[in-house]
Image (cartoon, rainbow, N blue to C red; front, side, top):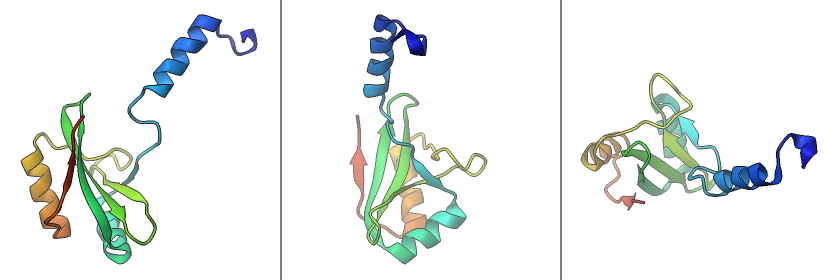
Length: 109
């Protein structure tokens, strides 16, 4: 363990942080220009609005029927981070306008 520069207690605390972090896999974020064609071509299996407890915001994600991939709607300025909405109503209205979806799965933590 000393090879990596971590003591045994530091290694276990580091592993706990990794194991219990809410975001283990990186989110695939697409800007609106890429998000809409990808979703329309692949078909929508499920539209989710999830709550992020750290930021107290909501995110829109869509699972594509043909590939099973999950895409998050990205911000306009930073394409690698999901767009954040302050309230669930705004997130639902945005998803309805963009995608024409009427059924949602709302995930809270």
